[in-house]
Amino acid sequence: MKGAGATAVRVLRQLRHDPRTVVLLLGVPAALMTIFRLVYEHERAAFEQAGPVLMVLFPLITMFLVSSVALLRERTTGTLERLMTTPLGRLPLLAGYGIALTLVAVVQAGVVTALSLGPLGLDIAGDVTLVVVLAAAVALLGMGLGLLASAFARTEFQVVQFFPATILPQLLLCGLLVPRARMGTVLHAISDVLPMSYAVDGIHHLSRQPGASGAAVGDLAIVLAYAAGAMALGALTLSRRTD
Amino acid sequence: MMSSSSAAVVARNLSVARGGRDVLHDVTLACASGRITGLIGPSGGGKTTLMRAIVGVQRRVRGELSVLGMAPGSAALRRRVGYLTQAPALYEDVSVVENLEYFAALLGAARAQVAQLLARVDLQGAADQLVRSLSGGQRSRVSLVVALLGTPELLVLDEPTVGLDPVLRESLWVLFRELAAGGATLLVSSHVMEEAGRCDEVLLLREGRVLAQSTPAQLLARTGAGDLDQAFLRMVGEQR
Image (cartoon, rainbow over all chains, first blue to last red; front, side, top):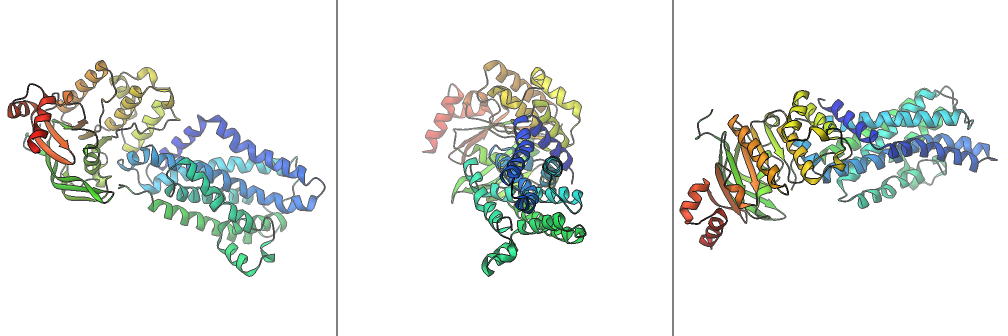
C-alpha cells in the first residue's frame, strides 16, 4: 500500500486549491436538505420517511461526479501513464483516492447530519455514528462507480452522461419513491441487485428502529462489498500498458 | 564509467502495432550507457511509441527489448527509469512543489532534491504557483524535473526542448550533458535536426523504421551533406 498516503494528500491538496468545489460539496447537500424540509413543511411523515434516505444519496452523487471526472483527467492528461512508470501500484492509487474521498464524505455527512438532527428536527432512532459510517461507505461506492464510468468515457461530456445511466436508476429503485416491498416482482428483483437498495434499507433500519444496528451493519457490509467489487473491476481498467 | 560497448537499451526487430497496423517495423537499436542518444525524425514517425515501449507502457510490442538488462516496465525498473511524456503530465490544480513532492514520495526521492532540481531548471521562484498558471515552457521544465527525481539511471525524454526559447534550450542541453557525465543514459527525442548535433549518437526514425544509427559526424561524412538537415533528406532519398 506504499504511496496510498501520498496519493490521499495529493487529492486533498487538489480539493484545497479548489474552494469552490469544497463549498459546493459541503453546502449543496445542506441546502437541499433544508429545501426538502420546507417542501414537506406540512407533511412531517413524508420528511421523516425520505429525509434519512437523502443522507446516503448525497455522498453517492457527489463522489461519483468527483471521482469520475478526477480519474478521467488522470487518464486523459497523461498523469496516469506517468504514475504507471513509478513504483505506485493500482491498488495504492485507488486506496489514496478512497482515503481522501472518505474523509470528505465524513465531513459532508457530519454537516448534513448535524443540520438535519438539529435545526431541521429529523428523528433518527438508531446510532447516528452508523449513519455517518454508512454515508462514507456509500461515498466509496460512488467512487467505485465513478472509476468504472471513467474507463468507458473519453471526454468529460461523456463521463457526466454516465450519471443518469448509473445513478438515477438506483435512485428510482432504491426505495426512496416507493417502498421496495411494494414494487412488482421484476422491479423488486432488479432493485435487489442494485447496491443503493441496501444503503437505503440500512438507513431505514437506523432511522426507524433503535435496536436495529445489527441489521444496519449487515446492509453496510453489502454496500462495502459492492464498493470493493466496483473498485476491483475499475482497477482492471487502469492498465499499465495502453495503446 | 561503463565501457561504451555496454548498452542501457537494446532492441532487436522491435515492432509495435497500433490500431491494427504496425507503427514500428523491425527496429533495432542500442543506447550506449552514459551517452546521449538522439531519437530524431518527423512527427508521426514512431518516436513516442518507441519511447513508450522502452518505459513499458506500450501495448502490443513484439521482438526483443531489454532495458538496463531487464524486461521493459519491470517493477524493479520503475525507480531506475525516468520518463518525460511529450505533453507535460502534471496536476494542474496543485502547486509546482506539491506536484513534485507527490512524485518524490512515490519514487522515494529525498525532499531536498525537489528544491535542488527546481533551482537547476531556474524555477525556484515558481515553486508555490499552481501549475495551471504556468507558461508552456515552465510546465515542460516542471515535468522534466519529475523525470529527474530519484536520479534515474536511464532518462527517456520525449521532446524535452520543444517550444522553448534558445536560451532555455541551451541550458537544458548543458543539463543533459551533466547528467550523462554523471553516468546517466539519455534517450532524447526531437523533430529538429539541429538538436541531433548535440547528441553522442543519432537514431533517425522515419515512418516507423530506423534509417540510420551513427554519430552526427559519421552521418555527415556518409551522406556528404553540409548539415544534418541535408543529411536526413539524403538518407530519406537513399531509402526510396
